[in-house]
Each structure stands twice: as structure tokens, then as C-alpha cells.
Amino acid sequence: MKNKIQNQLLKIFFYSITGTFVLAACNRTAKNTAAESDSTATNAEVGIKFNGDTSKTGMVYISGGTYMMGADNDQASEDEYPKHKVTVSPFWMDEHEVTNAQFAAFVEATGYITTAERKPDWEEIKKQLPPGTPKPDDSKLVPASLVFTPPNQAVDLNNYAQWWEWVPGANWKHPDGPDSDIKGKENYPVVQVSWDDAMAYCKWAGKDLPTEAEWEFAARGGLINNIYPWGNEHISKGKAKANSWEGHFPNINTAKDGFAGLAPVKSYAPNGYGLYDMAGNVWEWCSDWYRNDYYQTSTQANGINNPKGPSDSHDPDEPYIAKRVSRGGSFMCNDSYCSGYRVARRMKTSPDSGTSNMGFRCVKR
Ligand SMILES: [Ca+2]
Ligand SMILES: [Ca+2]
Image 1 (cartoon, rainbow, N blue to C red):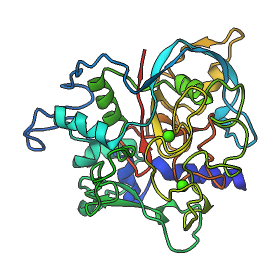
Image 2: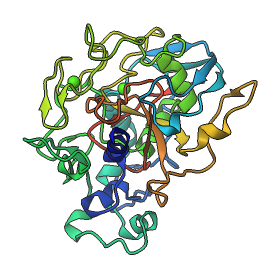
Image 3: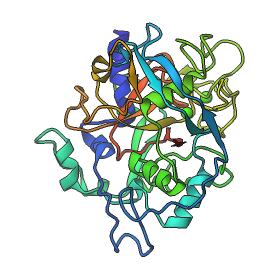
Image 4: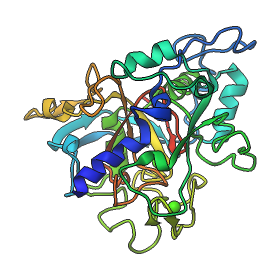
């Protein structure tokens, strides 16, 4: 039963089939038009130019190595198996999640318009949905994003629509809707960014998103087959180690770790490699496509070198939607569903989705 609930709840974050959640999986075109912007606006594929900064400021050198990738405890889901040998080459990684200040500098320099700021295109959306899915009301087909809206009472954990709301005007500058802003939150992780947005930022910064294998290697911080970036001590024991959900999800948040919502980056101790918030705060996009069975094709006696993920995506829960991997969990994670703060936990998300708890960090190779 628990696994069933976990699987249902994994759907919360980034995929959706009916109602307003259709839009969370929509494929808003990546092409900015003159009508949408009079700037030199760009997108993930064209127009973004490297800003010329070749320094490694704010990055940590990861010397690479060989490790066992995948499940470490009985909370693991099927897609974390089998555990298999992987070698990654050295790389540099941002020591913390990309912040609002960093993302603002990118937007200022490029005029980039994020996915959440574009009008959804129903003709594109429906290609990713089961045939016959009804068109949402036109009032919903506006620039918007998914905002976490906790209920006041305990709810059926299978019904994620009770705490996610499609909010017109929500985007990275207004992460909780048009009446919210990010003033004074310059050092908080940017959220409401799609995979396309993250890739565009990386291109401007002369960086890339980590592969899933790089991300997990980095998250482990040099520990061998441990559950969390800090070791094996449970997240709720001892000193606060990460920004997760404490209490009863989604209606009671004790904020024992100091934060009910997002936390400024570097609020908790780093892992063994000097990386902050590899567990919790915001989920982090990786470059790989998601396939549920990918690890089953990754087992070789001598291991595999620098895997870049499968060539296509498949999620049996939602076969119409191509998805990318994200990692690390968020302020909304606890053991009652995703335990996303485990280093092996995989998440799957449509690359044009943004939410209140999704961000990213970059690497350089
Ligand atoms: Ca928290
Ligand atoms: Ca994180």
C-alpha cells in the first residue's frame, strides 16, 4: 500500500493527465515571437550566447571516480534498480542551487523569457496527452505555473490536485503567483523554471546541466553506498541536515529544520565534496532523458563510463509525455511519499514544466 501511495504521489510533482494539470505537462513552444518580446529574446536552442566568464567562481572540483549507482535501502523505487557500476570523469559543479540573483543576471543580459511566461499552445499540448483528452478552458491557457497551495486539513494523499494549483501569472519572479515576488530573496534558489529554461541559463554561463550519473556521484560526497549526502543517519535525527517537509504532509509543517518553504542556499552543512543542498530545498534538473528501465540496460561487469542517459524517454505511468530526470528532493519531501533527499532517488518531469519546488545547478567539464 505504501508503495502504491508513493507511486501515486510521485506524480504530484510534474505530471498530470486531466484538468488544470494538463497544463503542467504542456509543451509551450520554445520559440519566442516578436509579439511576446521586443527584446533580443532567446530560448534554449537559439540566440543564447556564452557570457564569456571562464572562471570557476562558486564551483567545486569533483575529481571523478567509480561508484555503485542506484538503490541503497528499502525505500528505493523500482527504477533505482539494479545498482550498477559507473565511472565519471572529473568535472566542476556549482556549490549551490542557482539563485534568483544569478538567474536575474541571465535574464537581464539576454532578455530570455521563461516557459511559464509564455502562452501555452493547445495544439502542442495535446500531442503529449492521451487521445481524446478534453481541451482546458481558455481561461487556463494563459502564462501560468504550478504553485504549491497547502490545504488546511488532511487530504487524500492520492489526490495531488488538492495541493497543486495552476496559477496564472506565476513564474520565477512571482513564484507563488502575481501577488508574490522575490524581493529580499536574492540568495534563494530560483524556482518555476523548466528544463528548457535551465539549459538556456547553462548555455549563457558556459556550463551544462549535470548528467544523472554525475549528479548522484556528487551527491554521495565520497561516501560509499550511503543513503543520504551526509551518511546514513535518518534525516529527522540529530541536527537539521536539509530542508525537507516535517510534520504531516501537506497540511502540517512543523518547520523543525528552520524553513516551511524554500530556504536560502547554503543554510545547511555541505556534503563531503563541499556541495550544499544536494538533499532537499529544490529538486534539480539533470540533462538525461528519463526511462524507468534505464538501469537495467546499464549493467556491465566493468561498469559504464560517463553515461548520458537513454536516447529516448519512457514512463509507463504516462507514456505520452517525454520526461527528463531531476534529483535531490525538495522542501516538500518526506518519508510518507518520495523521500527525495535520498541520493539514489530519481524523479521524472516534463521538460517544459515548472513548479514551486524545482530548480537546478550547473556543471563544467
Ligand atoms: Ca522544511
Ligand atoms: Ca537541492
